[in-house]
Amino acid sequence: MRKYEKRLAKAIKKQYRNGGLKMAFLDFTVEEINIVAMFLGATRIETITRIYAALPLMESDVASIAAKAAKRLIALEEKEYGEISFIPADETDG
Image (cartoon, rainbow, N blue to C red; front, side, top):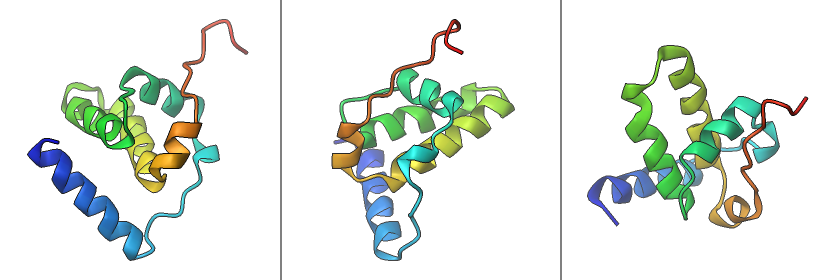
């Protein structure tokens, strides 16, 4: 695990202890699911890290959605993360 991943994991654990993370994964929007699918990693921390690493390269409206998606991922436990299929919506889905 890289240094910044360890710091992120520590910050997530601290927020859980303080009761600050209570968002349900069912609250993910289609746009957020698509972003998570683009940066999907083997673990929740890896996915969050990938999203945060890409934020400076995104346009502001997309970065806003990506940041919200990352916050929702932070609120999940690793088990919950493993149970969700982040399948991007196809343009033909309606």
